[in-house]
Each structure stands twice: as structure tokens, then as C-alpha cells.
Amino acid sequence: MKISKRKYLDYLNPLELLKTKKVLQHNPTISGLTKTSHSSVLSLFEYTEDEVILNSSVQSSDIVPSLFKSNKNYWLNLDILNAETIEEIGISIGLHQLIIEDILSKNQRPKIDEIDNLFTCVLHMLYFNQETKSVESEQVSFVLGPNYLISFQDDCVRDLFNPIREKLKIAITKVRQQGPDYLLYALLDAIVDHYFTVLDNLAVQIEKLEEEITRGSAENYSMNQINDLRKEIMFFRRNANPVREMINGIIRSETPLIQERNTKYFKDILDHIIQANDLCDTYRDVISNIRDLYLSQMNLKMNEVMKFLAIVTTILAPATVIGGIFGMNFDRIPYLHHQNGFWIAGALMIIIPIIMIFYFRKKNWF
Image (cartoon, rainbow, N blue to C red):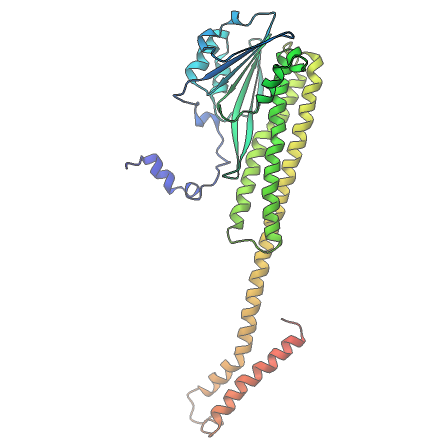
């Protein structure tokens, strides 16, 4: 099987060999744009207080400004980011090229923009993978217009928006009765609330590791587990922390696309993201404490080993001295030719260490 040079170089990278998460490589200008050969999946909700219509077979060619009638509200959701489809939709409804680039980029920092009378925001949905015990992210972009909201997401399998879709089918819900700005709040709230689910899973891993180390049952690879958890928390914090600034920007924004009566709902999201960031900081401190505890236990074990070796060396020192003295190359050494010299020397080599052991025990040195 032929291996490319790039892949071969990856094998020589220690990070690739250890399969550790690269949390420090985060540059959207280097990573390039998302490229996929799969077609985008579009779904369009057309709703008012009285009715809701779901069109799951809508095509990108159908998305034109005249589609969004002024007497109704619309939610267009796009799964699987296909560059051609997004550019076609963007050109049709008048999205600025900078907005299209932000939607297609993989590692955009959570932010908001107001361009050409359209309100856009970008952030990351976070998931916890139970198999790999790691935090994964999916970038989600929103474009808010006068009576429509367009959402772009790349993963069509994992979706946090199904509860919102179900609420749209119920006439008495606020999502149904209010405009697309409230729908934007509901989607953002679902994303931020799921952050706590990710944090709960991280907390389980942290508590499990802390219990193992506290009980002294930690393995030699526990330091790797600590570093992996630390990286997961760093990854979470890097994606969640800027959301606070983004929600603050929405609250302070004077765009007419967000009604003043709905500002209080975004303030509720702000409270949640502040709490999530506080929990993340707490977990980071706990991981640091666990790391210090683990290093302290390793040092304690090393001290015990060194203490045992020092005692053994001290106990054997008299025998070494006696053997060294009688092993010197001199003609006249006391008891050298004595008929019981060997037994006398052997007795001294045994009696002196026994006396030393009783002395050490009396001093509580071991």
C-alpha cells in the first residue's frame, strides 16, 4: 500500500503516535475551507401562529428572496456543508462573501456580524464521545433575516434541534407564536444547555480518575489520563468561553432583527454560559490538583523505595567493612590465621546488623 509523504510525516510526529488531541493548532486561515463531495440536505419550516408546513424536499435552486413571504416565518436548516450549495444559496439571497467564508471555515471563533441588513452568528455545538472519552465540536452558523432564519451545520447525524422542531409543531409554544429572532434564541439555548451535558461527562471522568489516585490504585499511565482530561477541558473552554462575548454582543446589538422584548431570553443564555465557563474553570483547577496529588504520590513512593534501599545499604555496611578489612593484602592482620577467625568475622557480620535493626525500630525509622 502506498503511503503519501504527508501521511508518512504524520507517523513521525509524536502527537500522531500517541494519538493526543491537538488543542493548540487552531488557525482558521491555515485550515482552509470545508470541502465535501456529499450533497447538502435542506429542510424548510414555514410557520405562522395557525399552521406549520415542513418541506423536506426543498432544493437549493428553490431558495430565492421571493420564497420568504412577508406574512410568514421561515426556518431553513442545511445539513452537510457543501461549498457549491452554500455559495448558490448565498448568491441567491444576497449573503456577503465574508459570511459565506465564515460558514465554510472549520475553526471560526464564536462571533456575531451585521452585514447588509443580515444578522449572523457562528459558534460550536459540543458533544462528548463516550467511546473515545473526548469532546468533539461541530461549527454551526446562523443567518437571521427579517422573517427567516437559516442554520448551517455539517453533521446530519447528531442534532440538538429536534426538540425545537417538535415545539414548532405545537401551536401554543412561543417558538411557533413569535418570530425568527425567538427561534434563534431557542436554538442557541439548546446548544448552550448541551454544554452542561458535556461538562457532566467530563466530571464523571475527573471523579473516576481522582478516586483511583486517592485510593492509590492509579496505574503508570495515569499521568497520560490526566493530560488527556486537561486537553479536553482546554478544548471545551476554547470553544465555550467566546460564546459569552457573542451573547453579550447580541444583547447590546441595536439590530431591528431582534425585538427588544426577546432580549431578556438572550440574557438567560448569558447566565447559562457564565455558569458553564465557571464550571469549566473549576474542573481545570481540579485537574491541576489531581496532577499535583499524583506527583506527590509518585514522590512518596519513590521516597519509600529510597528509604528501603538506604536501610538495606546501611545494614549491609558492617559486613562490607569487615570483609574489606580482612580482605586487605597485608601479612599481619589480627585473627587472620586464627582457627576460628572465619566464624568470628561471620558472627560480627550477623550480630552488628541485628543490633542496628533493633536500634532503627526503636527510633521508628521504619
